[in-house]
Amino acid sequence: MSDAMTGPLTGVRVLEFGQIAAGPFAGSLLADLGADVVKVENPSGGDGMRGWPPLSRSDGGAAFSENFASINRNKRSIAVDLKDPTAVARLKSLAAKADIVIENFRAGVLPRLGLGYACLSALNPRLVYCSISGYGQTGPYAEKGAFDVTVQGMSGLMSVTGEDGRPPVKCGVPVGDFCAGLYAAYTATALVMQARATGKGAYIDCSMLGALIGVAALQTSDYFGTGTSGKRIGSAHPRNAPYQAFRAKDDYFIIAAGNDALWRQVAEAVSLPELVTDERFRTQPDRARNQQALCEILEQRFAARTAKEWLAEMDRRGVPCSPINTYPQILSDPQIEAIRLVRPLTLPNGVETKTTAFPLAITGYEFQVRLPPPELGAHTDEVMAEWLQQPAQAPPLRSEARS
Image 1 (cartoon, rainbow, N blue to C red):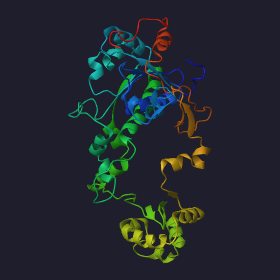
Image 2 (cartoon, one colour; image 1 turned 120 degrees about the horizontal axis):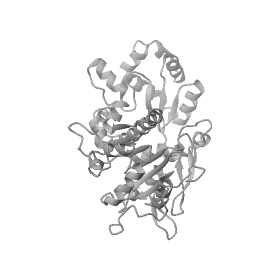
Image 3 (cartoon, rainbow, N blue to C red; image 1 turned 90 degrees about the vertical axis):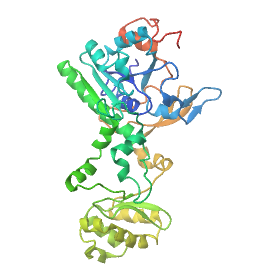
Image 4 (cartoon, helix red, strand yellow; image 1 turned 90 degrees about the horizontal axis):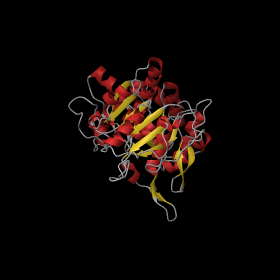
């Protein structure tokens, strides 16, 4: 392992049985903070995301998935045939040296292969083992297949996303996968601290369903308090107005006048100061209750100027506002440059591309792309030699007859 592999989690060893998004994203969060994350992959193709476009190709070289690269940088890869008892036995030896195991196979798969928590914790009592699944390891849906869109629907998220009266839509970002990955990485890190203090690890049952319910605290508490479900209200807010996207002369823009003082600035900006004392809009609850009428009044005025002009006016008045950016627009924005959120990345095939950095600034630690996203199985011998102090030419982790 390179001496440059430093960070808050330096010294933490992670075995990631991750595929597609949730497990690999959890692993990438730990890797970005310095953990030694070893990705365990099937020698026949590896993580399915390796085949996802866009596939960037160097001149005459092999193609490499930029989607895969985005959540698998700073990791190493070992190729393991999980149906080969000899390979599984050596994988157990690695687990005995690990601090964390992350997996997102369907419930029950790894235990049947002898790689579940009960088996591995017997070898390594301080092991923190995190299973990420759609619906959890127990209950009537435990073995039900899941993808991000199905869990968005199951969780209630889609019931409050989109426009009223329109067909259901999912969030444009796979929040089920990524919220589960965030919960998994956060909880695993906390339990490693506990394991180091007590010598006893733990098992984490992390479900995408639970993660999406967890981040819907405002929506669920609203239901508990009122007995009614939230509705689809587009970009608007159920308890605040004006707080949404509005149509200007040429495009949409967003304002969020979240209190009475900001509302007064909006009313003055559109030369309608009398709206502040209008009984329909006097208080925040009044404005939320009558936000459709308020939207119609404001958009009549907003139609006179461009979105850029209105954004400049709202900025001048201190009203929180924003354009509705595309990713090309925001990724080239000077604010993103200032916080250094986009970094260069070299793929294993030599293609020069870019990636987004770990998005938090931490005193005393500077995020780096220390390792490129790995080629399948590129570090099998290396990891065995380091973790188990075995010769680099130890027996293979996969059956040569099957590879």
